[in-house]
Amino acid sequence: MTARLKHLRGEPPYPRASDGYAAAVESPPFTEHGAWLAMNKDSAKELRKDAAATGKPELVELAALLVKLEQNETWRAIVGRRNTEFHRMRPQTIDGGVPQVNPWVQYSEETDEHEASWQMDFGNPLNPYTPDVAQLVDDSEVALDALVGTMVQWARGWQRALVALNVTQTPNQAGK
Image 1: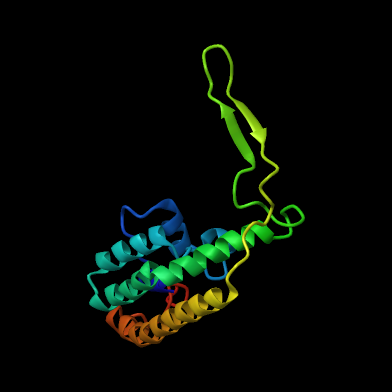
Image 2: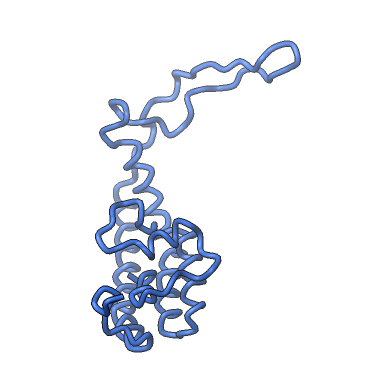
């Protein structure tokens, strides 16, 4: 919502925006996944630049809140864990999940006479990682607190940003 705020009036993203960022902020509401912005370092960087290009402190403040959340170490760790675990254990993966380490081990270097040799090391179990559940719960609580705190501040700033940008109607409502 922060990325799309200034674009509610039909303004394009800042001139050097990445294609992915530009597509996300220019896509109509309810567009499928390809137009979503990830809450990651690159999107936060783009958001900060786009907000700065408005010259509106209220929008810069909204972007800064999200950048600060993305930079929170516990938040990053929990999101990274979610990304890893989701992709390892989703239905498309093999039974038991995908190993955290590559089972292929290089046993010889490539030379002029022969190619490198690789062997599969069956000593690596598929799921060698057993989480410390208590630590995971603690980290999740810290990350959730960071998210809630950010969103409380964001909700307050949202109204100020709408007023600062004089956003009273969308381009569609205005007939643009």
